[in-house]
Length: 139
Image 1: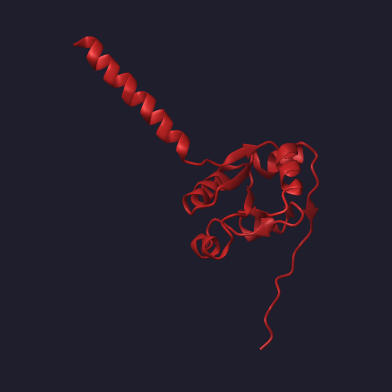
Image 2: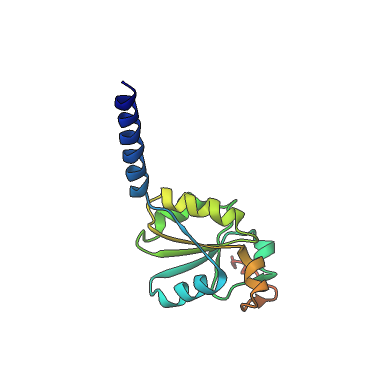
C-alpha cells in the first residue's frame, strides 16, 4: 500500500515538473550579457519601465520609456510577439513584473536586466544623461 502511494506521488511530481517546463519564462541577465544579447539580436526592443522623471535623468541608449503605470495592454497588443524584449528599471523589481506580464501576453523572448540600471552603472556600462524635452503638439 505504501509503495503504491509513493509511486503515485513520484509519478505526479514527475509529471508536474514536466508541465512546468512547458511554460516559457523570462531570462534575467547581468549587464554585460544583457547588452551583448540586445546588440546581437536583430529584432530587439529595449524598454525602460521606470517613470518618465526617472528615465529622463539617466537611461540606456535607444531605450523606449514605457512606465509600468502606463498602458501595457495597449502596447503588448500592438507589438510583434516575435520581438525580443529587453526590460529594465531601477533595481529590477518593476522590470520583473513587466517581464511576467509580457510572457503572459504571448511574448517568448523576454529578458530582464538583473539589478536594473543600478547594477548597469556599477558595472560602468554607458548611460545617456540629460533632460528630454517632451514634444508638444501644435494645434
